[in-house]
Amino acid sequence: MLAKFLTAVAAAALLLSADASSLMGQKKLRCKKEEYVCADGVTRVSPNPYNDCIFDLCPEDVPVDGEEDVGDEPDGDGDDDDGDDDDGDDAHEWERDGDDPLDAAVADDDSDDLVECKQEVHTCADGVTKVYPNPLNECEFDLCPEEDDADGDDVSIDDLLDEAGTDAPPATTAAAAATQTTNETNHGTSPATTTAAAVKWGAIDAGKAPEAVQDAVRAAFALYNSTQICDKLIIFYDSIETHNETTAASRGSHKSKAKTTLRSSFHLVVNVECFLHGDKEVEGKFILNMEQHSEHEEQPYQLVECAHLEAWNELTNWLAVRNNVGYCATPAQKKKFDLQPLQYVDYHPKELSLLDTVVRNKNYLAIVATVVGAIGALVLLGAFVVIRRRTCGYKRLGKDHHDDGPDCAMDEEVDMDVRLTPPTKKDVIRGPPESAREDEGKFV
Picture 1 (tube, one colour):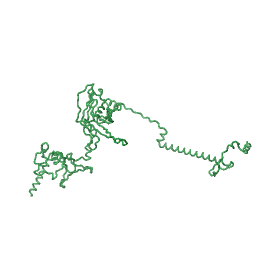
Picture 2 (picture 1 turned 90 degrees about the vertical axis):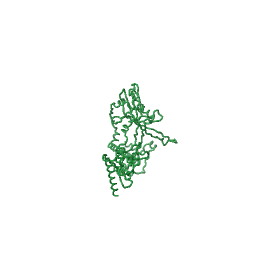
Picture 3 (picture 1 turned 135 degrees about the horizontal axis):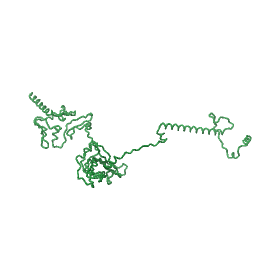
């Protein structure tokens, strides 16, 4: 019994030494801090930094004596995966393709089933997000948010312009005569420029672009169709994206069934080369934006944006409008526009009126309000005095002429029964009484 135990220990030491010797020359990698619990519920294995961060084998995964090595299974083309293995009896070496031995055996199978990954989880740096092995990505862990941001998988306009159209170079043709304009349009393969997280624009193949859109692209460069501008014009598509928008009828419509209108927008990246007498007048990528205005017009798609990718990846506006139609400006027009002198306009503000000054300045407004209030108070006081004097005059007319009392003094008791009787017409005709006449004669 003791002899068998010593034999097993020696065999294990030999296997470990063989594995260590094969891994001594390998580079140590930086693996994620994660663990996998084996089927026995006790044993825990971690990624091996000397074996491409692949998890060490669990006890149930270690092949026993007499069992065929997983790495020696032939693949689909009849070749052995372990072609570089010098020691065919070593059951722990396999081709380092980044997969677990069990996953490699499943991958070599001709079946179309998904790869069965280990049931393990990795917690990201934020302590909340958890990622799992992806069976569609060879059981590699999905990226954490911080790793996704670091990788820079977001598609930008620079990526679109750098990667688009690499599979379809422009076709070269013989130089045209000076009196003939040659327009060549080649269709390139459009790569996908949108991520699966937020798909708003869908990339389509240039060959599947609607004929109306292709006509709109040719119409956008209609100003180039002149021997004075280009005697040879080459246009090919780099990328095309489309966005469909459904516009429903208004809710207040009296129709029983509201009709919906499907309008499409197209973003296109085209490469343009313009030659004049053998010299390149303009070259590079143009970004075009086509909007659908109506289905019944002769040209349903109209150019609303034309930008050219200049040096240092800067976009400049090349849009020119003629008769309310958008075109891409010619090199001569763009140069003339850039060289025009800047015109500065001198601003001469007109003098503010007194009312504007008062309204804008709170101090002036307070002063004016005070003055207006004082004037109003004086007007009210004057009106009170005038009314008071008239009232006192009416009172004096109803009293005896020999009354020497104060003239409408504040402490004077007013007799409310006194009424003024206006003179009648008869008194006016007769004149004053005789006593008044005698007094008047004596006075004279």
